[in-house]
Amino acid sequence: MSDETRRVLELLAQGKVSVNEADQLLRALNEQSKRVDTAPNEASNVAPKPRFMRIHVHKPGKEGREDKDVNIRVPMAVIRGGMRLGTMIPGLHASMNARLRERGIDVDLSKLDPAFLESMLSEMGEINIDVEQSGEQVRITYE
Image (cartoon, rainbow, N blue to C red; front, side):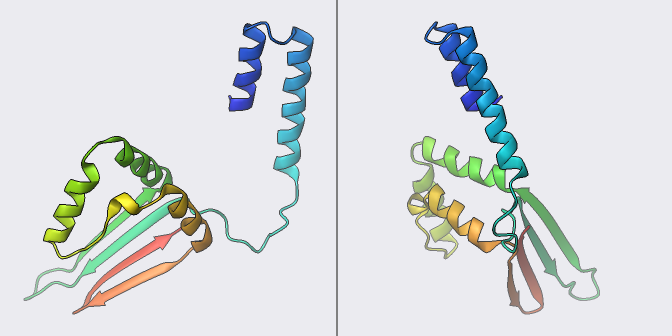
C-alpha cells in the first residue's frame, strides 16, 4: 500500500473526507500510477538505477596454494538502510572512524550524506572500480 493510499484511508477513518471523496481520490491515485508506469521513458539511454553492489576480490595463491576468490553481492537497499541506521546510533561514526584510522584510512563517516550517496549512485550506473596490487584484484561493480 502506498503512502498516498494510506493517507486517504486515514482521512476517511478520521471523517475528514466522505466515502465518495475517498473513492474519487483512490481512483485518481490509481490512474496516476498507471500513467507513470506506462509512460515512455524519455531518457531511454539512461542506465537504470543500480540495485546491487558487487565486490569481487581475487588473491592469487602463493607457494603452490590455490587462488582465493570472494564474490559478494549486496543489495543497495541494505547499504541505504545501513547509512540511515548509522545516523541513529550515537557514537557509531566516531568509533568506526577511529578503527579506520588505525588501519591507515582517514575517512570521516559522519560527513557522508545519504542524499549525496544516492545522487552519486544514480549517476554511476554500471561502473567498475579496479584495484590491482601485486597480483591481487578488487573489483567493485554497481549493477
